[in-house]
Image (cartoon, rainbow, N blue to C red; front, side, top):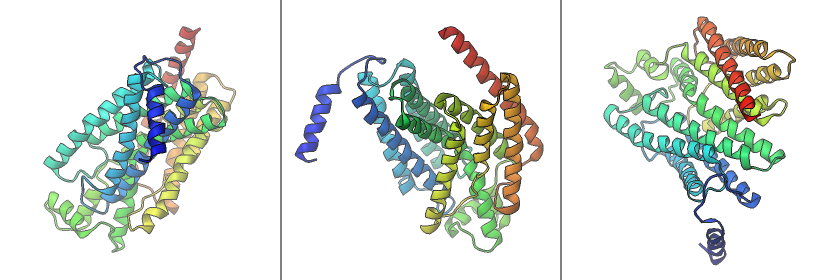
Length: 368
């Protein structure tokens, strides 16, 4: 570290490294770099997790694989920020801090559990395992804390709006992440059927040995698509609908949900050729999510009673979602789905949407 950098670090320490309680006044010149660092840390975690899925469809697991190291770099930044907020109380209220602390704690506890799981059970290719679910849960809670802190402390304006949208994009990616197993799996199965398997022979042999079969289509199918067909649309559309409703309401701008959903789809489209260019498997892309964002925005702009908006919005998300998956199956690529699950998807999304409305009304009443 050069002399100028050391002086800046010392100046920052002398000015801000002091014990304080959450909710204290925080100068803008401190809030902005703190929450930009949150964006950097979460971006590194996003890039690492994206690469990690492709890595596991090509190679056997490796604790020190480059995607894990990239994700770890982002985690280190997030942990350091959480420690700073905890000690100084700057840039957070009590709720935001508790969310950051609990989210980071759950994530750090999940890491050794995941490592032990792999040591005991070997390759854990499915994104839907218990240890992975803990990692998603920890990440979701910590991002929720960052969103709360951003809303309370980051200056209003265009930069604040786009930064908040970026945080919701990270949240959406985290909830959608397990569905990528099916999106990579359908492409992997197609590659096998064409006689061009993307996975390395050592991975295919490991998967076949784990179910006591030769390396054949049955083994590849077990590896690529082990999840029930109803999971992809039900989890994906309910969780995405809820996230986009919350994003639309907290950002408070027209087409905010479309911005978040479109940003995520654009990111997936951007990394697709990059992964292919460096020799890694690619996936089906959830292009229909852009239309889900449009449905959520239209439900919030229409002059309708809250109940009608929730019911019609959930119906639109369900219909457009299942229809979009079907269209992609016909002309591009999409995982297999169980279409009768649409009824459950609609009921669940409607119930959660109405629950959010009720919670919002109560919150306003208590605040008033």
